[in-house]
Each structure stands twice: as structure tokens, then as C-alpha cells.
Length: 139
Image (tube, rainbow, N blue to C red; front, side, top):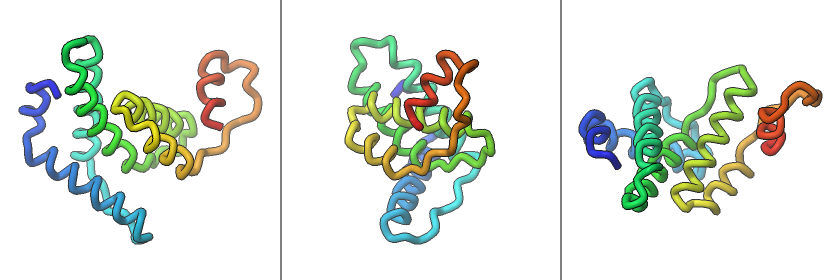
């Protein structure tokens, strides 16, 4: 990952995010309630997304890109979108899946999308254009 992002986040924040991911995934397996995620978790997720974005143009840092994308994927798949907006929920799913693919975690992405309850979409796509095409792919 780009060093300045790691330094800005701090090792404690990254370790806490990793622990929350582990607890959330364990809760899914055991059927207990997931731990509550706070604003700092969202900030770490946003920072990891920034790290991936920064590394996309760096051809010589592919392993760092995969590592940052994997951390972003792991954290984003544990976040639950509280937004009532269907579009926002689907964008989060799309971003999460993209980071999983960049991390070379395609089987996990497939499982994540199969296990995720997709929100209902409006059936009239006449004015949606490209956005409708992208959103229909998840429907």
C-alpha cells in the first residue's frame, strides 16, 4: 500500500479494522449478530480505496495493488449500507466486487454477491442509460 496512507491511518487503525473484519465474518458463520462498525471503520475503508486508486497507475507495484485491494474488499464486504437509497447500496456492492476482482479473489466475490440480498430495482429502465445497464447487471 502507499506508505503515506499507511502512516496516516496508523497501524492501530489497520489492526482494529482487520479485527472487525474477522469478527464480522465469524459472526456470519456462527449466526450471531455482527459487531457494530463505527465511523472510523468507514474512514479506514475510504482510505484503503484511496490507496487502491493511487496504485492503479503503478505498473511496477502490482503486488501492493493486490494487497490494498484485498484489504479494501475485506473491509467493504463487512460494511452494511444503512442508506435507504437502492442506488447507493448497489454502488457499494459494485465497488466491493471490483476490489475483490483487483485482489484476485474472484471466488470470494462470487460467494459475496450470491449471499448478499440485492435490493429491488425499479423495472422501468427507459431513462437510465448506462447507469441502468450497470445496475441491471446486479438484478
